[in-house]
Amino acid sequence: MKQKQTARVISQQEIAPGIYDMWIATDLVDFAKAGQFICVYPKDKSTLLPRPISICEVDVAQKALRIVYRVAGAGTKEFSSYVAGDSIDIMGTIGNGFPVEEGIGKKVLLMGGGIGVPPILELAKQMKQAQVVVGYRDSNLFLKEDLAKYGEVYVACEDGSAGVKGNVMDAIAQECLEADVIYACGPMPMLRAIKKYAEEKGIKAYISLEERMACGVGACLGCVVKTKEIDHHSHVHNARICTDGPVYDAETVEI
Amino acid sequence: MNTQVTLAGVTFKNPVMTASGTFGSGMEYSEFVDLNRLGAVVTKGVANVPWPGNPTPRVAEVYGGMLNAIGLQNPGIDVFMERDIPFLKQYDTKIIVNVCGKTVEDYVDVVERLGDEPAVSMLEINVSCPNVKEGAIAFGQKADALYNITQEIKKHAKQPVIMKLSPNVTDITEMARAAEAAGADALSLINTITGMKIDVHKRKFVIANKTGGMSGPAIKPVAVRMVYQTAQAVKIPIIGMGGIATAEDAIEFLLAGASAISVGAMNFVNPYATMEIEAGIRAYMEQYKIENVTDLIGAVS
Ligand SMILES: Cc1cc2nc3c(=O)[nH]c(=O)nc-3n(C[C@H](O)[C@H](O)[C@H](O)COP(=O)(O)OP(=O)(O)OC[C@H]3O[C@@H](n4cnc5c(N)ncnc54)[C@H](O)[C@@H]3O)c2cc1C
Ligand SMILES: Cc1cc2nc3c(=O)[nH]c(=O)nc-3n(C[C@H](O)[C@H](O)[C@H](O)COP(=O)(O)O)c2cc1C
Ligand code: FES
Image (tube, rainbow over the protein chains, first blue to last red):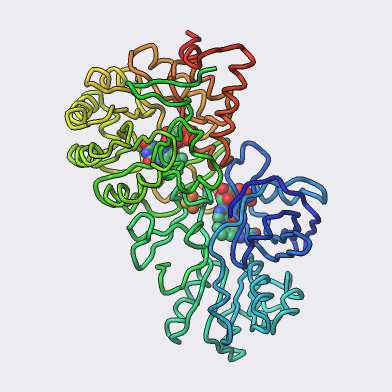
């Protein structure tokens, strides 16, 4: 179920330089799944389009959704100014989410890179006892403590200030981590590396993709990814990330 | 109060329509919008065969609007007739199918196929998409080419034909007159205005296609002006669009001479926009004691 609504900010804090952590009171939680996202609409009329932001955590009892985002431009800058009690325009919940059931009873590896870490939190919560590998630029290890509640966390840091020096792939190699299934969200080079790694090892990898969006509901055909098979909507090889994704079996997309 | 409008013999329950390419085939927005409340759903452009569209990024935000270079990705007429038409038939709204092509034959092919489908009330011919390299736009930027393709399509079309005009021309009235002279039953305007955006930090074009069509509230004054000029130049009815966000915007187009209006990019910003506009037009009519919405058409001149 998708709905656009004006919700209320419960709390917001800056958890690392330029990284904001916001809880939103909304009944959309009832539909929220790990790996789905919401669209957040700036109030400034010069910035019209929705900003897609992943669901980081779901609290059904409190009817609250958590998002964690980086200030990247005008829209996210505006969101970062919101304080408790402010209204926030959102639409959701959007996308397919991670196929949690594919990991049941298997050895799973959850991988998040940079601002791709947030959706991994709700997934880790669902998976319980997963191995979690997260990559950061520097020593600002946002969400690491939260993740540690639900799994074994391995850190990779590009500047070598914490954990393994390098990226998430370096961390897998150094820590000799193995898995039957990988779930990942992060920058494109990381997702490409994971796709290749999974193919070589003959294991499944589910990756969450990003693309520029205009509608967020599958109508504009702006947000497509090249697919191996013809997509069910346009019968070409371009599937809509907002509706068919954002999570794909890595084998099925050409990235 | 009467909100009905009639264009080329087709009566719509109200003048509110969706702009092609911004509303899919209605399915995606049916979660938000009661399609029964719309005058018509105008579908995404459909060609004779599936088109893959352009590389990504295909969309970008600009001040008060957006750029798009989707490149008319569509499943082709076969899938469209099997899937999208039956879906739309479930609703009490009119269906207008937007048609695209690379050659005159492509257009005629689709137009003929749609002739077998009585549920389709009108055809809107997109000769003004700035985002596909071949065909399409070329037909919409030269008056003689527009005349020829309009005439050819009229020979084969069973439904009334709307020619969708490009704003990327020196004189919109010359194009409008050419379409009218060739037998077009109605006109729709404006399609997007060709634009460009450069990322100064990456020193790269933001849209993979380099250029994209601009739409959204920022283009509205241009669209209102073109609708007005066109209404002064031709007798056939006009569907006006370009940046419509509210009922007041819609009424502005009616006053300028449009017989109906389409909501495009603003669906993305406010999925409920079409319904709010429909209700807002009625509220306006009540406020100013207007009996027939048609009394507003071209009322400012
Ligand atoms: C499915 C999905 C989930 C995402 N989840 C998160 C998240 O949890 N946390 C987070 O910090 N970021 C996330 N992003 C990226 C986030 O959408 C962008 O950082 C944000 O839209 C930037 O908006 P802005 O106005 O601050 O930047 P501007 O650069 O001013 O934005 C201009 C336009 O470009 C679009 N845009 C800019 N960067 C991106 C991008 N990377 N992806 C898609 N559109 C972009 C904006 O939406 C806007 O339309 C996600 C993106 C996608 C597609
Ligand atoms: C994402 C997008 C896709 C579009 N696709 C089509 C199309 O397939 N055929 C067409 O005739 N016009 C297409 N258009 C143009 C719109 O129908 C409309 O003419 C234009 O966007 C101006 O209206 P607006 O400012 O309300 O969006 C598209 C516009 C957008 C934004
Ligand atoms: S954002 Fe419009 S189809 Fe995905």
